[in-house]
Length: 360
Image: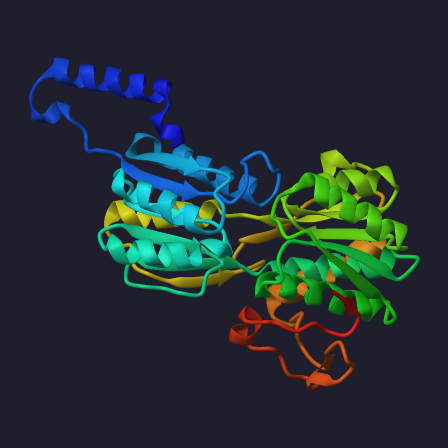
């Protein structure tokens, strides 16, 4: 159900229309607001990925006021149901539609072909069209920062990673984490548990317990609920939030989190729609552009650990450090990337192999 079609919104719109009619004359009618739709893979209360996009949706409303009207559909499965939801948004007057999960790519491409007058934006995708843009964040940059912290705080040298699906975005993050950690702790290993869901608090909690029971003393995740944080915190294990600051769920053990900051990009794209300058594009932004940030560091972290983390973050921003600079070996120990070479963006976006130290 579209959130802008609630009874409250309908009545508010009817009241406004009645007021305009009472004034009379063409000047009494304001231009119709731009309808902007969002398709979410999870619930807006996941405290992670979908929450971050919905914060940005609300930023659009705050920025443009009555010039825009936003709608969202949450908990949309990555499959045929996505086609139906995206098409319904397009047929109900939405002129700009953001589809916010990798698995929405093919449905978005199909619907975009059917509605050439509607603009579409797909998060983390790889296919563009005249009316379809793609945007992504360099989350791997944040993984390098938290991997650095993990390498410093671990006692066992074993890290646990709760992962969603083995797509390049997730594989890339796992690799960036352990590469950074092994610069500090060369013998470190990372164990991955796949939960095959973006949001399943029960499975995420169970996976966290299993990893801790196997000796992992640092937990991170590429899933969207705070369950791993709550579970790790209850076991006295350091952990890292996903997509938003999850420190309230484990104040003593939440080291930091990788923050997704979508608001400025969404505002820029809506502005382009309003002034007629929207064009298809392909952006991949990170620390430097402000699309990726780090949550406050836990005050319990030693100063030298925070200093090491900040050195990585600042090095990425000024270009002196790239998380995927060789030498890099694959799982078998064979050299994959020679010393001094950096994996190109195109190869990163298609990454389907693991580096040394990963058990997945």
